[in-house]
Length: 152
Image 1 (cartoon, rainbow, N blue to C red):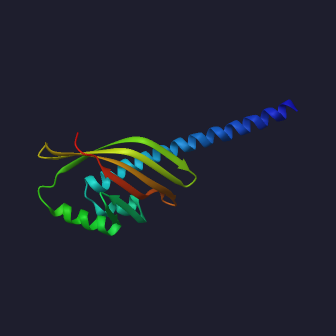
Image 2: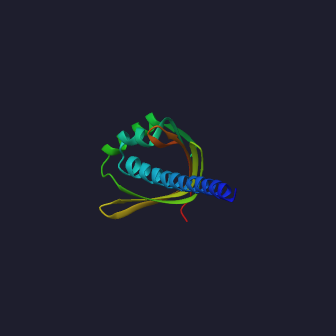
Image 3: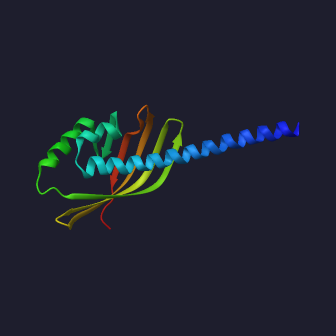
């Protein structure tokens, strides 16, 4: 009987341990998703990467405006042809990530430094939150809410 209890305890402990590892892995994936989406879409101004990181019904709520994939693509396609094209470096500081089943939310500070010819022309800071869902192609952002923070 003791042996049976030991086996059950080991199985239960192993299951709990794997569940926690999975959550940490998902949190890492969400963090990487946010970073990659800003680097691959907004820094590169590449509308082709929208479908890689955003769901088809993605919404961006920023500064009182509602953007979707089409309006984002239009903005990026116009921005890429303007010269000089600033270099954008992102720094994401995660506040918190929560994962439940196939959904997640993340809150973070988003800092961007824009430069031309290695000279900084602007620094920006946003407080943001995003939701993500687990699709058959991995985690994708479903919604992002962005609040600009005034320069300190």
